[in-house]
Length: 327
Image (cartoon, rainbow, N blue to C red; front, side, top):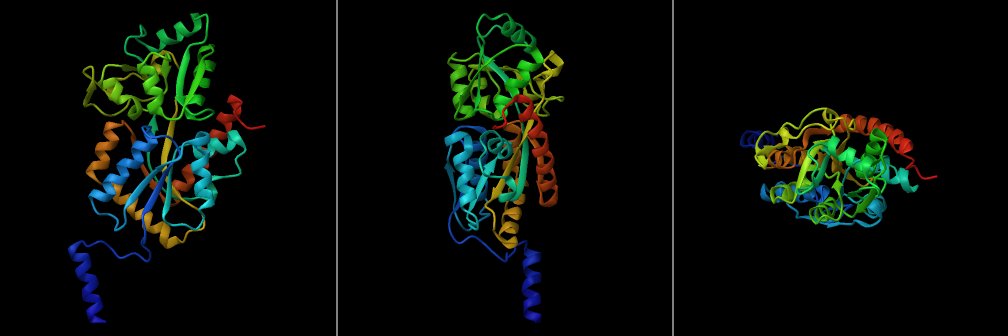
């Protein structure tokens, strides 16, 4: 007994990695239900890099993109993988919205919640050469246009589409919403002048902002973003005005969370909770949050579950108001 006690004490004193009741025995697969280049893909690959760089897992991490059917393919893959502790999915508010919009026989309660890593903002982006200087300018142009202006976003009847509907309602205008497989594709179309604007997350358009191809008009939030380091044009994320301050009274943020399939054990869930808690505590993760202007908001356990319940209720109302609910 004394030897076991001494070994445990030494482990605590040296800060060695704790021994879990369960650990993965093969590669860990993170499913991204969108194409490469979008914010969900960027988050998954950042997590992959942090885990491998810091040796947080003895097994490799593989990111697999499954963008078909607006994310439904990836979600169904995890549903069908019940009991498999070597699979994860990174998802957003689409975990509620896709089933609501498509009658997909799936609910987030069939998954195993692991952790919410952050919340993400949305920005109204325009081409750098566009004449609009404010959200008010853009909405006035939309109202005066003979044909609806084209707005791009990720997927149909998802977060971006919901924001565009809210813009139409707030401004008394009509837009032509163009769905894309990822925010990266929407940014490319915007930089090429094929659409008038996008509602991308900050991370999805920052490269083109830095490259002088696109620029932000406002953030769909009641509060400005917190990050003050200059990003492009001598401006920081904190310099972007809120949309309500420019007369466009639309706000929206979405979760960025990690889930396992259903029917895994408590020990398997606990392993990943501890894993993502470690990831969230690294300097690399904090740098990622700053680069993508994400809102730090780590939650696991009951705090995450209660957030999911409230968020599902909120999205049921939003989807119903927009007419996006499947009949």
